[in-house]
Image 1: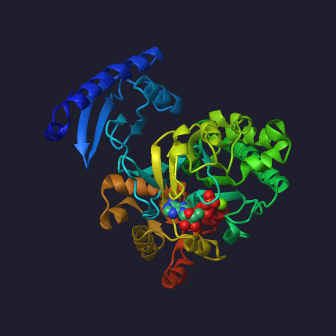
Image 2: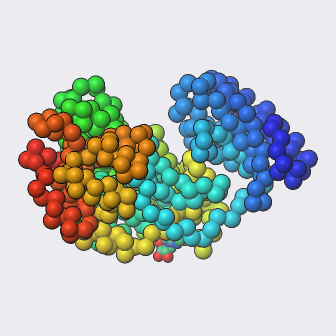
Image 3: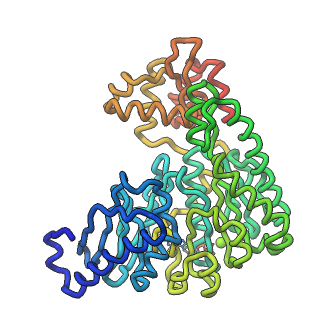
Length: 454
Ligand SMILES: Nc1ncnc2c1ncn2[C@@H]1O[C@H](COP(=O)(O)OP(=O)(O)O)[C@@H](O)[C@H]1O
Ligand SMILES: [Mg+2]
């Protein structure tokens, strides 16, 4: 156990407990056939919280996913008398065990703004912002009784998905969550307002998977996920694909109203869960109640569950977050997750989504992106590493920006010209200043307008 000054504030009994835990966690890994590849144990006391961190040696762990599964965390927690075990991956991978009493999360965490490539979800008990790259987010279960913060959380996801250029498939049976998005251009199908319409939305999503399966087959390298496909597409000069966020609000009720867990809706969704991961579709199952049978059909495909205040212990258990029964009535937005422990989800002003929902209003570029795009426009629409370097980016940042922008369909290579990258109509459409819109029309070439269909 490494020493640091703060350890002086840690009592003897805590130290003994930490030592016992540091012995037990490797045993659990070993029993599950995993290497107990701990490289260090750290004990810290900060802001009144005492944490024990078990640091894993990433070079020795083999397949990382095996070390991050919710049921392993649960197993680790059970082995140490129920103390929660969280993942902390701010640097490398660490298990975090809170030795002191659980902290009080703030009642409100304002959404700090879009972070390109990731979804910002809330604040964790560790004090860290919970921010997950879209490609690692997977499918989500969201449970909570009326007033607990479900719709707000779904809107938080949708808002960020729109800013990311995702397409949407939304079901909103009671019409209270997404009315402002009816008719939005990012919707692949009309907003569903009935269980039958929800099935249509799911079928549309399956159709999108079929389409993407054939498109994946047309590039080299046998892509296994959207990032791999988009990288190949960019290499081969074809348009990249957008991620699709599918939100099924009142999912449980819709399933019960259409044949139950073995009915057509539940069966179509189970198929979509498996296929969607490969083709860049993220599903969000949102409901007041979840029965075991309904969760059972999708459980293995869900990356994380967010359980807000629920009606009873059974629902909390069904979604794998039994501790959620302790969430008080007066804490909307507070959720227990099976992956990151308690999280105060970010509060997003609903009117922001209203604005994003207005026809013709596109998600804003960050100030930096706007600046770089304008610099490219002044350069005849051409974006290059030297130009990005001139704008103050390091070589590495410049290369990453070009790759990211190509994958988002913001720039395209022009083989007919000088094989340089040119900004596309898609990026042009995102630029906010009227002056940019005016000067941009000329540099766009016919081959680049293809990207508009993305
Ligand atoms: N993340 C949050 N942080 C703080 N307050 C929230 C948060 N989410 C929701 N609330 C509050 O709770 C109320 C109900 O939220 P809502 O999302 O409509 O709940 P639900 O869809 O579960 O019925 C909101 O009007 C808001 O005042
Ligand atoms: Mg609601």
